[in-house]
Image 1 (cartoon, rainbow, N blue to C red):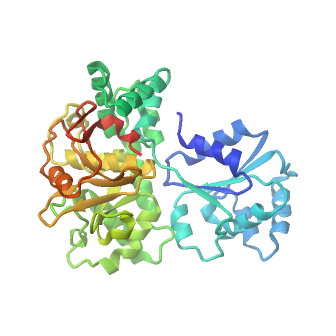
Image 2 (image 1 turned 30 degrees about the vertical axis):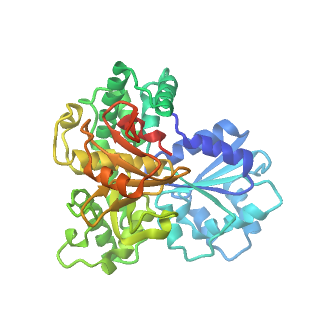
Image 3 (image 1 turned 120 degrees about the vertical axis):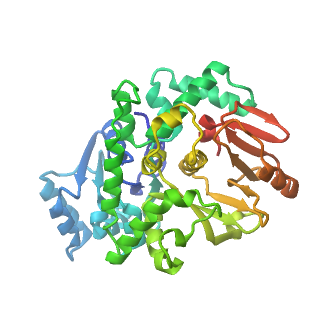
Amino acid sequence: MKRKIYEELLKWKKENIDTPLMVIGARQVGKTYIIREFCEKEFQKNIYINLFEHNEIVELFAQKISTEEKFTRLEIILNMSIDVENTIIFFDEIQESEELISSLKYFCEDKRPFKIICAGSLLGVKINRFHSSFPVGKVRMINMYPMNFEEFILANMPEMGETLINEIKNCYDKNEKMTDVLHQKLMDLYKRYMCIGGMPACVNNYLNCNKDILKYDKKIIQDIINAYLNDMNKYVLNSFEATRIEEIYKTIPAQLENTSKKFQYSKIKKGARSKDYESALNWLYSSNLIHKCIALKSINIPPKAYIDNDVFKLFVSDIGILTSLLEISYNQIILNDNFLYKGVLTENYVADEFVFNDISLYYWKSKSDAEIDFIIYNDDGLIPIEVKSSDNTKSKSLNIYMQKYKPKYAIRISSKNFGYENNIKSVPLYAAFLIK
């Protein structure tokens, strides 16, 4: 399955290969698969080292000897003389060795043309709680997420996916309606994505079932959730923090339906306070298991200077995981039924698409309860974005915002076709990946 991060890997190879690359992402988003494919296709020789399977290498880098000596001994362990000029080394699960992470500075500064790439589960958490000397400025870091909807299209339509995506882009750029047949086809595909999500193992199983949603194995996503819950005992300060991490994660579905439209610690349990859960919240955020959307105190540029750190919403990193956590019937989604969490799912989906595109998540809420789901900052200034789960596009909040702040334009994401009217750009749900 084609992954867009491959383009980032190629860019690193072309422009910055002397600097070790670190790919950060949650468990099972496809890091190992795509990096191994990249190493095998793009280099004469490659070496794959999984630190879970090579504890002797973890122990080697923990020794109080020079990194030069460590590299020599690494060659002995691997029983080979490494051709540095033509070989890329992939250290997987590198979070198992802080000392090896620190040694990336050596590989960056050495005159020999080392090519190092590394990845790991909970790597973001490990870096956030680093005890050794982190090689600041000597490592390039990129995030990897579950498959977004564009990648889902390509996986489902390997022969015509690119053509279809180009047509979507054309309609988006020109604000021209998609043909009714294609619009409906894409909306149907979007609904299936809402059921399955973007975890590669889930998408692969769906494809192997000949795209029969009734035969799709729901146990795969549940196994991933269980693995995430088990991971919550790793790299924690103590057992209390591990418990609090799990408590926050399990309460996110309920938090998303809050009428207050913000995360409330009281929803976790009675008497819960922010200071008791701050560390656990940061763990989840660093792990890439959740996304944080922060409220803006006022609408000014740059938005980051006007955030309210105490008011925020949390989203789950994969829409398939959220659908599973909520135990929503696939029939309700496929048949487009109205149900309580339909709007919640849709908003979470858009948040995931934005994060995939490196869009910072902000939202706005007035004192009179008007709310804008997302505010993005681009070359056109601050752009309000409203998300609708259906084709009902009436919005008092958006009207209030536009009258008060007069943005260059607004974006409404819904099940309606492309269009532009009353200074509002209409974007179908399946085209959210085009918003930059």
